[in-house]
Length: 219
Image 1 (tube, rainbow, N blue to C red):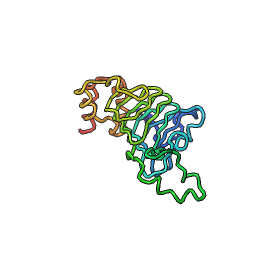
Image 2: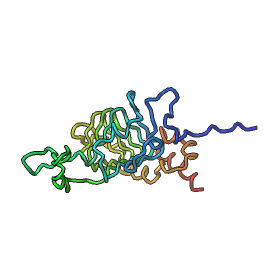
Image 3: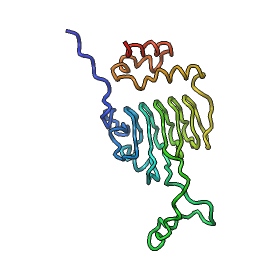
Image 4: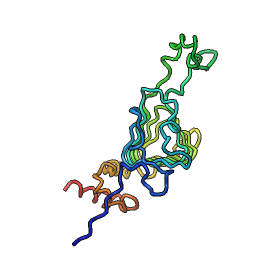
C-alpha cells in the first residue's frame, strides 16, 4: 500500500508551531469585522502574540479596514496606525478635547471631517521586519519587504523593498518583466494541494519553474 501523504499545514491553527506560543496565525485569531487577514499569515511576538488586535492595530475606531493578504510574515512589534490617530491641525491646538468626556463632548463635531485615507491594504506574501510601522491608508503590494524599524508613510510597489523613517524604496526584488510574470502566476491563490507539491519551487525555484507548476492547476 502507498503511504498516506501528510496533510498540509492547518490554516485554522492559532499556534502552528508546537511549543512556540509566540507565533500565531492571524486569520483564526482576529475577531474584529474591520480586520481581514488571509490564510497562513502569521505574527511573532514573545510577549503576547494573541493580543495582536489591541496591541498592534492602534486607534482603530472605524470605519476603515485593515486588510492583510495571505502568506504574510509579521515580525515582532509591527504596528498599524489607523485613521483614528489623526488630530486637527488647523487651529491653535491639536488636543482632542471632546474625547476626554464631560461637557467637552458637546464639541464632538470638531472631530468630524478629519483626514481619512481609507482602508490600509497589504498584499500577499509580504514580509514585515521587526518594529516596522504602517501609517493610515497605505497600500503595500504583493511580495514586498518592509525593513526593520521602517515607518511606511506611502504606498509600496509590488516586490518593493523599503526601509527607513520615512520609509523609502531601496530597490525592487525583481525587474519589471519578472514582477509581471510573478503577479500573473499569483501562487498564493493556488489550491493548497498545488502549493504543497511545489513549496520548493515557490521558495527557491525559477520563475519558469513556477509558471510550469501553475499549469498543473489548469489541466
